[in-house]
Image 1 (spheres, rainbow, N blue to C red):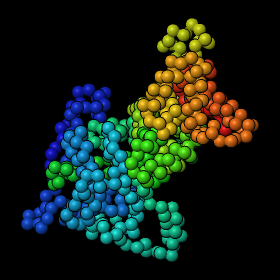
Image 2 (cartoon, helix red, strand yellow):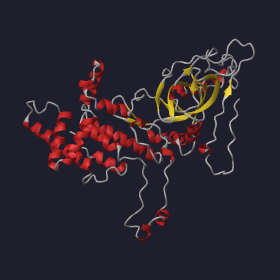
Image 3 (spheres, one colour):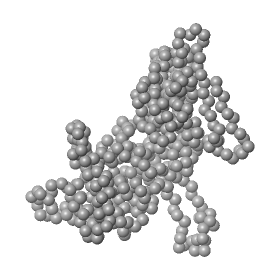
Image 4 (cartoon, rainbow, N blue to C red):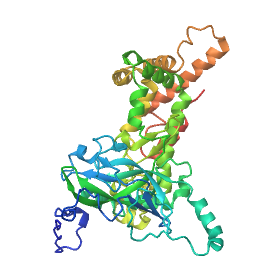
Length: 468
């Protein structure tokens, strides 16, 4: 057994998660002398992932035994990708990439694991469980008739197994950080308790913490225990991130060689209307508002991998809710706000900033809107060049450029069709309104001068996107 260093206690105010001398506790499994095998074949404990619900405290376990892999160097991401599901036999680790991996970020890797509720009488156990499992019993209840109704009620409440997305940090330091109240696990517990405010499921549904076993990828006799954050896996969203969606949305079809992929992208792009753009953006901003309703202070919107997109492209779901380690919303008192500023002499002119979700809307959100309006099937370089052209052109000429692109992107072929005069006139009026809205948004003209200041100003701006 490798004994970890004991952190010094000279300064009790130092956050233990930030100490540089934190070392994970690992152990080496050795079979008894002359044992026929190693790698946990003869262990007396089940190697199932165990989990507990944040709110009810109910216990869950993976349906199959599972052992993950790790490396001492957190930068060696490939070493975290192997998984073994062997039971009562030699551990067999699949090649990297075959461990039901849903995604990988800077701080953690996410696996897909099926969980089931555990039962006190051991009814959840099957041939995959070891014969010796302390804490679980196989005996049936003594009075079956008196407990029948209770069992039926219990069965009805646990008929659904959990399909989990298991998030494993790459290092002990990262694990300790996400366990803080102001970080991911603490906020996940808050979201779980406030789930009634997440009725539309625009925020990823967290439900508990898990405890699992992992082995060193370069020494399969060395093991350690890991704490993991569990979220509910949804096939409708799965691993389809907003980054992938935007890439497909702007893909130039002429450059796609695979016929099936080209037809799929053509169908998606051709069916994506101005109304679809508005529905998508409204769902994104409503997800930010749901975080505010639940009392979360911040969200990291500096990249598009934190947002999942549904397969019908009509809704989004936020993931990685760590609040930038800022925790819950703080509501400073008016007295404190005025004391710490020069506005105390005249608070009526400059009242303190109203609390809202701390999310950066100045970079990615304008870029997303520009790409959705200008870049459908045209590529990112076209969006950049066209944006520069509109920015440098006089106002009327810039709006004319936008009108032409809108007609080509969302109403192709209409100009060449023999459309009734009244219908064509209505279409031209609609396109003109959209062009004026987008031009004002792009150049931050009135009334959208401060539309990226917070989510409420952004919602007001998107609400006024004209739809036909």
